[in-house]
Length: 90
Image (cartoon, rainbow, N blue to C red):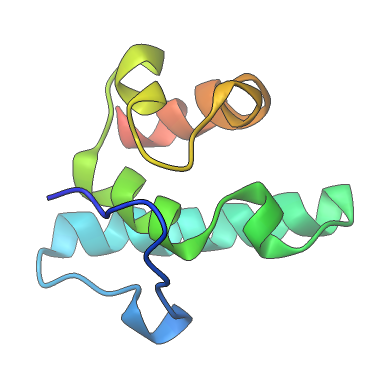
C-alpha cells in the first residue's frame, strides 16, 4: 500500500508491524536526519514522513520504481534517489 499524496504522517506514525519494513523506516529516519544536518535544511525538505513511509513500504528496486512514489519528483530523485536505492534494494 502506498501513501496518498497530501497525507500528513506524524513521526509517531512512522511504524510498521513488519520488522523488515520497520528496519527500513528506522534507517531512512537516521539517513534523513544526517542529510538534513549536512545540508542545513529541515527534515521534510529531504523527504517528508509520508514519502519516507512510502519508500520503506514499497521498497523500490530501481530509480524508475522510486520515481513512482508520491513525493519523489525529478529533483529528489536526482539528489537522493541512488543513495536511497543503495539501502532499499540491498
